Length: 285
Figure 1 (tube, helix red, strand yellow):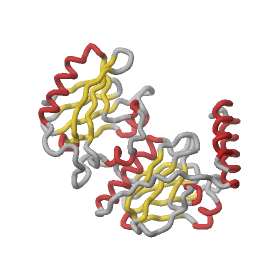
Figure 2 (cartoon, one colour):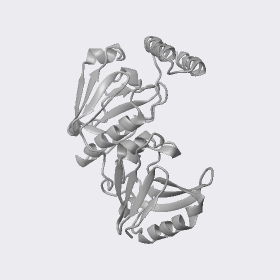
Figure 3 (spheres, helix red, strand yellow):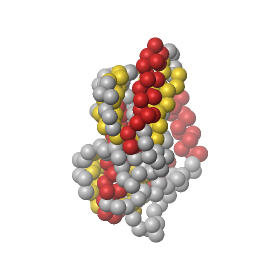
Figure 4 (spheres, one colour):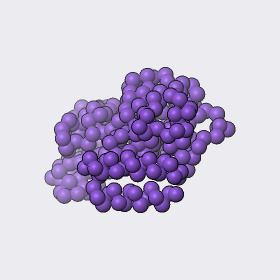
């Protein structure tokens, strides 16, 4: 098609066999979009297209990615809010007819078993090297290995005893990313050896880094997780996300309450947020 459809925060350029999505840079654009910059999405990576009413006089054109076609969406595992979905294009309602035209054009070009996972990722992963700062470590990925360098102010005694960690991609089966919400998020590296026992608590697992307010933001940690996941899959291994919920021990709860108090005193957490989160942490004892 070769046409460009511009919406809020992004513009889609339609090609004969793909869609090039370019994200705007600006204070109102979600940070994840700014971090991604642009994405080249082959039509083979899509299973469908929808057009639905949006909020406040808008319509939403959404391309539906095939399961297993995009490492970013696979790492996100459905945790992204609508406003941070990189496959949504929000348009003024007066452009609904034009949006419907492009939706029909895309549907006509979608072929093949769109609901089935492809043999490999069809959308390119964020490029390495990558790095970000978690609550308890500095994390880096050079394309072949993931490195955790523990922080003396945030890492648990178990992680300090284990020492700084290096994980070759060949030794991993995947990653588990949990969206950072206050002090609850984490990035866990999953070993190829399925029989290897891992602590349930992310605080105690040397293969896991913990996120919190101001640490491991989505626009940093999610592209990181996607890059690692793509490298793992390129080695011929598959991810097996874990779903276990963790509980903190008394010492870890006390440390997290201390850190929460620091954020509260710095004005990064409101009185209500501090009280609610403190109650949640105490409930884990």
